[in-house]
Image (cartoon, rainbow, N blue to C red; front, top):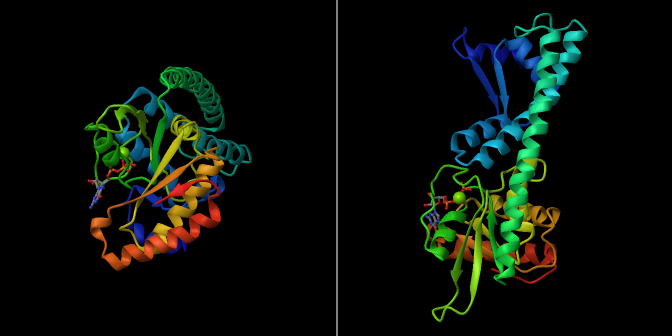
Amino acid sequence: MIERIKSELGNGVSTKLIIYDELKPRHKVNLMRELGIEVLDKIELILQIFALHAGSKEAKLQIEMARITHQLPLIKEWIRRAKLGELPGFLGPGAYAIDTYYKHMKRRLAKIKRELAELRDRRSRERERRRRFGWPQVAITGYANAGKTTLFNTLTNESKPVGPEMFTTLTPKAKGAYLDATKDVKVIFVDTVGFIKDIPAEVIEAFYATLEEVSTADLAILVIDSSEPSFMVADKVRTSLKTLLKIGYIGKPLIIALNKIDLLKSDELYDIITKIKEMVSSLYHWDWSI
Ligand SMILES: Nc1nc2c(ncn2[C@@H]2O[C@H](COP(=O)(O)OP(=O)(O)OP(=O)(O)O)[C@@H](O)[C@H]2O)c(=O)[nH]1
Ligand SMILES: [Mg+2]
C-alpha cells in the first residue's frame, strides 16, 4: 500500500497527503516517516477549512483549541518515538525541542480554555438576560450545509451569510422575532454551527458554545437536507437524534424541518417522510413533528 501511495505521489511533486478518515497518532507518524511529507487526516482538514471561515474571536479560539487538542497526542507520540531513537532528527527539531514545544502547547491550551470560559460565561449571562424577558429560545440545528442559516434569516428577517460550502456559520447567532402579526409572541431564534459527519460533536469540545445553545433551548428545529440520497438522509437524522440526546437536549419538543424539498420529486419526498417518521417514533420519546 505504502509503495502504491509513493508512486501515486510522484517524485517530490506532492507536498501533502490528505487521508479522509481519522488517523491514530502512531499511524500518522509512520506515514510521515515513510513518505517524508506532511500528512493530514480528516479532522485536521476540517479544522483548516474552519480556520478559513473563522471571523469571531470565539470561533478562532475554538478552532485553535480543537487543533491543539488534536495535535497533542501526535506530539506525544513523536516524543516517545524520538526518545526511543526511532526518529532521529525527524522533522528538524530533536526530542528536546519537541518536548519544549509540547509544554508550550499545553500552556497555550490552558490559556485558550480560560479565555473561552470567559466568553462562555458572557454568552450564558446573555442567555439568562433573554430568559428574564420570558422569551422562549428556539435553536436551529442540523448538519453542515443543511440550510440552517437560510431558515434563520427567513424567520428573523436577517441576512447572515449562507453558502453552498460547508461551515459557513462558525459562531451561534441569536435574534428575536415575533411569531404572529399581532406581535404577541416573541421568540429568540439561535442559528448554530452544523454537525459534521463522522465527527461526534461532543468529541470536539470546541463546539461547546453551539452545543450549549442547543441543549438549553426550549425548542429545537432539526434542519435536514432532504435532497441527499435517502440512506444519507436517514443516517443523518439518526445521528442527529443521538447527538441531541448526548448533549442533553432531552424531554423537549423537536421539529424536523425537511429542507431543499424543491430538489425532490413528490414520491421521493413521500418515501423520505415515511422513513423518517418510522425512525423518529422509535428513537425520540418526546413531542416531535415533521
Ligand atoms: N435548493 C435549495 N437550496 C437551499 C434551500 N435552503 C438552503 N439552500 C442552499 O443550501 C446552501 C446552504 O445553506 P445555509 O443556510 O448556508 O446552510 P447552513 O446549514 O447554515 O450551513 P453551515 O452554516 O455551513 O452549516 C446555500 O447555498 C443555500 O442557498 C432550499 O430550500 N432549496
Ligand atoms: Mg449556517
